[in-house]
Image (tube, rainbow, N blue to C red; front, side):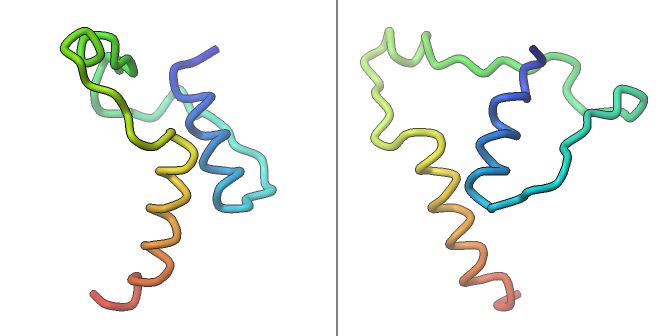
Length: 70
């Protein structure tokens, strides 16, 4: 499983996307290494107030409401 498999599935669910998601390994993807953990923050006492999928849904809804403002 690639690091972005779960987040892209979350995005598809939130947006209602029904198409096929493909990863193109031949294209550059920016940062050579992606770390998706919050363990160090939690060790300092931080706790998420909202889950990933709920946060994505809130951001998507905000974008839909504000996309024409720019």
